[in-house]
Image: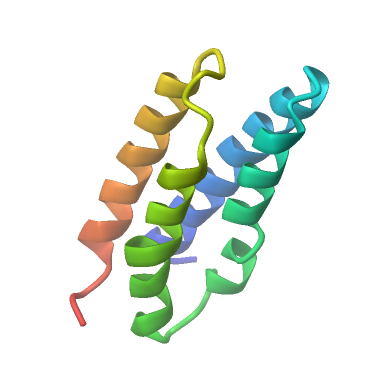
Length: 96
């Protein structure tokens, strides 16, 4: 498994924890935001099409940041952690 795939797995793992936390407290809006963010990631693992990776980084990541509820407790930590992982992905994805 390549480095980029490992980063996607870290995003999935962390994101599922965030999704679970949102579900436990009944924040259905945040559940939807997290689920929408994560649902395409499994198909990116092992994907050779650089355009798909660029689309995730350029569009899906931005959509997540636009939709995330910034009033949720600990959301700053969540965004910070995702940002670290997105930076790793950026470094591992050649420009298109």
